[in-house]
Length: 441
Image 1 (tube, rainbow, N blue to C red):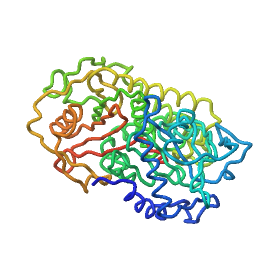
Image 2: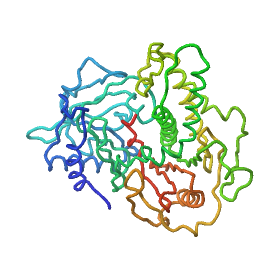
Image 3: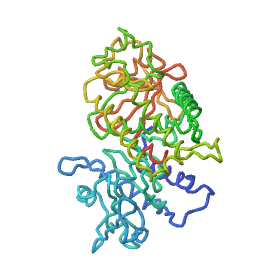
Image 4: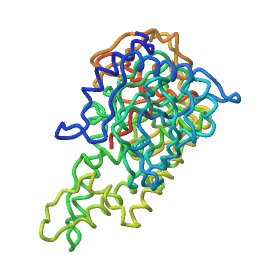
């Protein structure tokens, strides 16, 4: 079903009240309120129209915040706060003014501030410089940043692509007329959790051996910590590939050495295969070092069975070693993402890259349709013919149909992201945007 601004307003209104804004259910002091239906339709429609425009032959991208300027103190600024700059006189709110402003308001670093006027409708009061730390929820990172107030925010990310947020919490995403549900984030699914259980168990066993081998106190770790670590790395790879604008395909096999890829195989012609030596273990080694750092620093001789959570690790900002490991993990993700610049797929195991330039071979005649999932587990789906997709997507569907254990991620040049996996007797796909990951960590 295609959804456009008028229909989107009803959904936003419904989800605005459903969205939890605090753990105790209380409304925060800085919570914003939605405008009336007519005004909200005008706001969404204007953003939709500007998304279809171009400025100096570039797509228009921007972030917009509906909030009074008083919510942003004048004496703050990035990286830990927001710098708000007021125009000497308010500017009119329309798609043409937004288009003209967009080159000066970098999507990653700034927002356009608007508020309603009793007689003139919405007006642009100025610009809010946020810095880029807010993006670490999408790209990974643990630096301290200030959260946006719980107000209405719109991301314009491309033609017909809008993300509606309450602060940083996503309400809905419109992608080319199709509504993407942020709650249908496959990375939070039970099936994906199970897919990488073997690797997590290995890391847990390695850590317990380490604890038993040292004389100083070392805390325990749980799967939740390792899941977050794995997810941080994966979303960095996706984000770097998306920003590069060249697209890419990633084929992820669970386990260390997939038997399907040993020697010659009828599915993937891997042009550049890496030698399986100690260098391939770097991804796992970085995770082991991160776990050991967190559990050693937070080890307590008075509480030898203390369990370190992901939040505990994020709070270790005063440790320089944390920054070194963060940079090492980011560079590893950057390296893997860059491999996708070469034609063909990047093939990885749960421990690291196997090779790149992988060409998926075989006939596509056996597969005519796939399931598009509307929930995390892939139980609520709609069938669609694959003939409407490009060759990159169709080849991935064919591979998932032949090898049920592989998980594939396709990043298109336009920034769209799709995950494919054999589920419940059919190749099942989840349409994602990297904005869906914001606020997960």
